[in-house]
Image 1: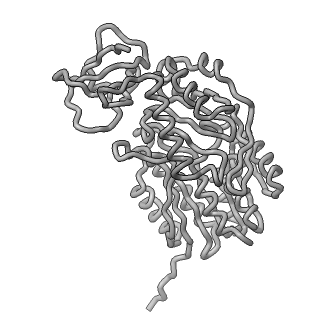
Image 2: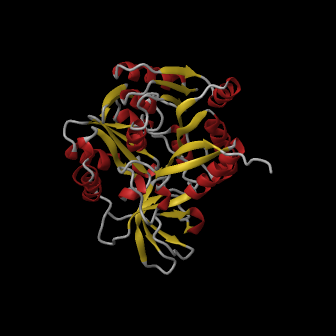
Image 3: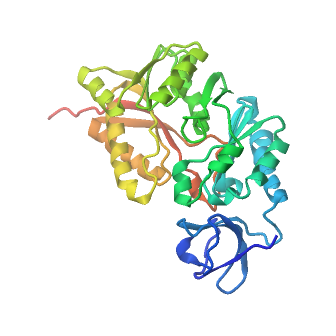
Length: 398
């Protein structure tokens, strides 16, 4: 298949799969957003093949730099097969769960594509217009690799708007059920494929849910930004004394209540603003043994970074104040634009302002089915900090 040729006007000095639009010599005759193209340097040498979109700040998403590789069925089958090999043959995730992330975008060599496996359903979430015209090249290999599973295309409307395309035809061609039930370690969860965030469930916290649950036996647990209840329910399954889970998303809380019934545990779910609830607890002297702070992404672009820093600071300053001395905090940031170093700095400042010190005993990230690549470090987005919290000992006056 002969592809349109796009040349660069600036020297490419890295192996990063994104080429920004300012570096591209755009053709006079406009190509459709998401066109597959061949990319050459300003000197005319081959660079690679990938997805071109003049409407996006990411003008080109490179899929291969191998001149002998064509973007055909064989190419995508190979990428998807390699992705499955990591999850099942190397990591062995299927031994603990029937669900995992199969494709984590750039880390699996498929820039702009997310695929999550939820039991017998494969949910495809395209972040690039390029997959609109080649969806069959994704779906067909998936059907071969996972016979009997159902492939669902679930695009994000905001991404489609940014990409300048309409994904509704692809979504209509590959519809999904309203929900699916999955298993994760001892946890059973209903994943809402109609109203759930992203692909429907946050598989990236699987290992952190299991780790935290091991510290919850006999404890009073507070799960903030609980979404569909994964942390709180895991805690109760591990023998927690009680669990309170709070969120502002009513749809998510409805699913969370179903999940609690599914696991035969009692969790107190509250539809309330986390900040207001934490302030109420502080004012009344109500405390917990374990607190989870796992807000949604706070920085989606560079303009939101400063506000995200302030919000993370506020969340953690309040959160540590409701912990009993020696209590356990799990605090997370899924904002890739907030570095681990900056997040730890925010936590240090928040703890000092609250008059406590954090004894950090574990730094974690996304589950192992969310790898990141040395040429795309942005793929390492999730920070999960486990710590004990102690009040600062005041020095006696001389």
